[in-house]
Length: 307
Image (tube, rainbow, N blue to C red; front, side, top):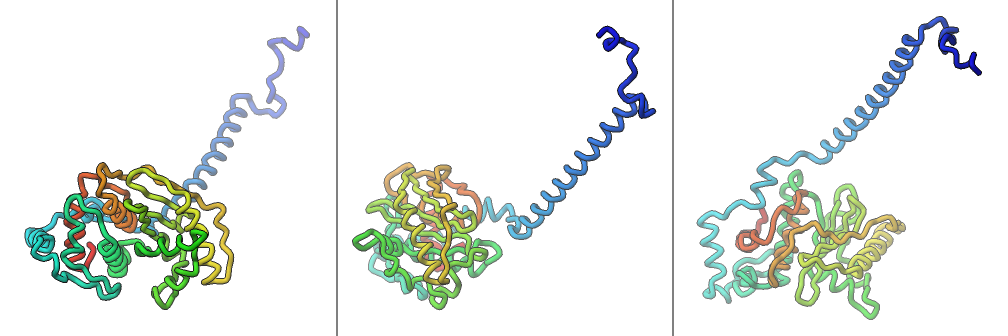
């Protein structure tokens, strides 16, 4: 035992003819080189992924993100809006959106005055304008589909609370001009939800494979997401004859979003959720922006052009 503990014992690597400190240095260098090669591979892989992501998601100009959604109305635009919202124009036809055949009278536009609840006509024509905006500038906005306010009412009708047949023909290729199920070209489908006196937004997020529910008052309705999950399953089966597996799709009740602080702006929050999502930017607005958004929405409807 004493001999085994002798301080004069031969070094571990003496048999190889290489001194211990050089052998340890060689091993350390080899391990370091191996780690560097792995890191180099990981970095190259990440750079390739990043390059692909940048190509498929062009960077937005700073002004598009920070200025475009909040661009102030000109004096002429404010005058036009104030005139349209005046009581003297209540019975006057202000504009007619030809593609949807929606007529906006002064009476209908009154819902964009302060403290008023938005109506179906204003919401639906605005959503039509968002779709036309994307068609006009496809590189600037996401290609999305916007169902009108009557879609979910029809879908969730009937004795069982679900009636696919009532909306089956809403999404034919001939009617839309594009395929609702083109995942690579149509990443998000927006569905307005009206809950008696409150507007919410549901999203079939095909890009991230999840169903989302956005409520400006923080509510959560599991039934809505179940109905939409069943709808997309039936829609795929009807249009392609195939079965889609959505068991891995998430159901998300979005909580990190701007909330309303009164009892009348839910409709405005709902359409701005759709607006900002289709811009592919964060929901960077709040309650303080609602008076401006009301005027801006009126301006865009009067000019039949969403900016």
